[in-house]
Amino acid sequence: METCAPTPFDHAKADIILRSADGVEFRVFTLFLSLASPVFKTLFGLPQAPDATTNQEMKDGLAVIAVSEDSKTLDSFLRFCYPSALAEDPSLENLTDVLSVLAAARKYSLDLIERKVCQALVNPKVLETEPLRCFAISRNARLKHETIIAARHTLRQPLIPAWCAEIDLITASDLLALLTYHKKCGIAVQTLWQSLTWIAHHYQNPKGCSWLFTSGDGYNGGCRCGRGDDVRCLIWSQRPVTWWMTYIQEVFELLKDCPSGDTVRIAADVTVQQVRGAGCTTCSDKVGENMAEFSNLLAQKVEEIVEKIELEMDF
Picture 1 (tube, rainbow, N blue to C red):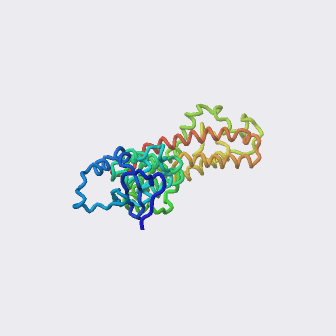
Picture 2 (spheres, rainbow, N blue to C red):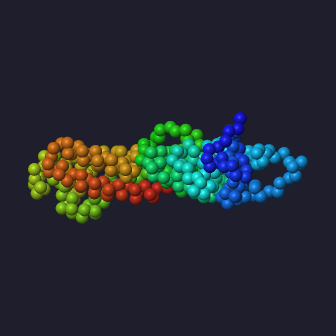
Picture 3 (cartoon, one colour):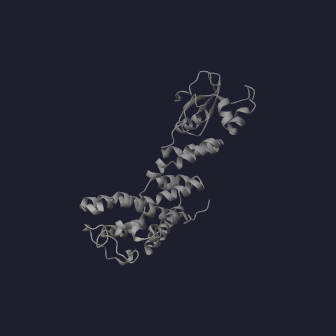
C-alpha cells in the first residue's frame, strides 16, 4: 500500500509523483529535479505517448514513476535537489545512509550531491570516531582522496581493527593493503627512536630543555625523580630524567600499533598526570607546558614520516 511522503514532498501543486521501492509516493516539481539532474531533465523531456497507447500509471492526474531507491534514500537526495527555502540539505553524519545516497547521486548524475557525500566522508567529526567505516565506504565507491584520508585516520587505532558491517564492502586485498600500510607506518616512525638527534636539533643545547635534566648538580636542584639508565635515551651524552625516559620508551611501543600524532599527545597527557601525582615540585611545576611542546614536536615528526608512506592501492 502506497503512503505519502512528508513535507515538502506532498505539495498539492506538484506535477509528478516518484514512487520509492518501498511504496512511498513523493509529489515533486519536475523543474527542481530537471535543474539539478541532467538525467531527470532528459526523463521529463521525453515526449508523452497518446493516452490510448501508453501504459503510464496515473494518479490524481499526475504521472507516477517508480524508482529503485527506498524512501529514506529518495528523501535525502530529493532534499539536495530542492531550493534551501523549501528543504534543508539532509545531514550525512550517519554513514549508513552515505553509500545509498552516493549511488543515487551517480545514477542521476547529481554532481553536487556526490561532492557533498565526499565531504561527509572526510568530516573530521566522523573520521575521528569511525575511520574504518569511512575507509570501506570510500574504497567501495572508488573515491581516491577520501580513501587515503580515511586510511590516515585509521592509524589512530590499533593495527587489527574492530569489525564493522562496512568491512563487507571491500575485498580481502583492500583490507590487506590497509593493514600493510598501517604496519609500514608503524615501522617507519621507529626511526625517530633509533636516533634522537631531532631533539638536540630542536632544542640546540641542554639549556633549551633543562627540564629534561632537572636532577643532579646544576639543574634547578631539589628534584628527586632521578635519571634514567637507558643509553638509547642519551641526549648530548646526558641521561634525561627518569619519567621522561619512561615516556619515550612507552610512546614508541604504542606507535608500533598506532602510528599517529594523537598517540604521542595522549601518552604525554598521561605522563603529565603521573608526574604531578608523584609530588615532585621541581618537575610538576612546568611539566604540562614542557610536555605539550615536546609532544607537539614528536607528533609533528611522526606525521611528517607517515605522510611519505603510500597506500598501495589501485583506483
